[in-house]
Image (cartoon, rainbow, N blue to C red; front, side, top):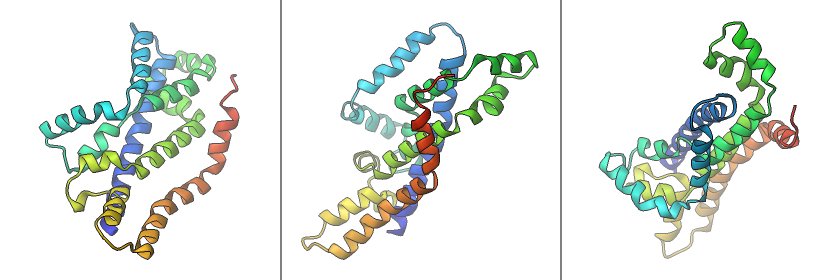
Length: 210
């Protein structure tokens, strides 16, 4: 159980951090920068949201196997390092910010990355935390993906480990199973309680535009 929890924290935490970082950068680029083919690229990103995970399972497994990433932390984290939903969500938040902020910063000579990191990113913190909660919940509770990408007990995540624990015994051990289920739910509950005000602020301001 300790190994399952450690693997889940590394997988969910690492993939959430990378997803929030890359989704924010990509969303900012689509919302505030002008470059050739921007609309076409964004439409292609949105189209990937219509492709179910079951369609990508075999190609993803084969590609990870060729790269030697199966049953490793890298194989678990890298394919989850970004998402079309996260890019779309962060683009919506950045697009709602007034253009006067970045124009004033450019006049002062600030670089594009400096504008993103010091001005724009702090203004969308509620959206960033909401996206982080969504990613963390999805990765923490994911069952099919970790089962596909891992083959050894030492690399199993909490959901996959609990599923195997329930299925490998003819006798049902309600005590250990319920304890494992509580451990799988408790961290998400604690995180939501601490970041609830940001989550509510994000929902309350999602339809507002300056």
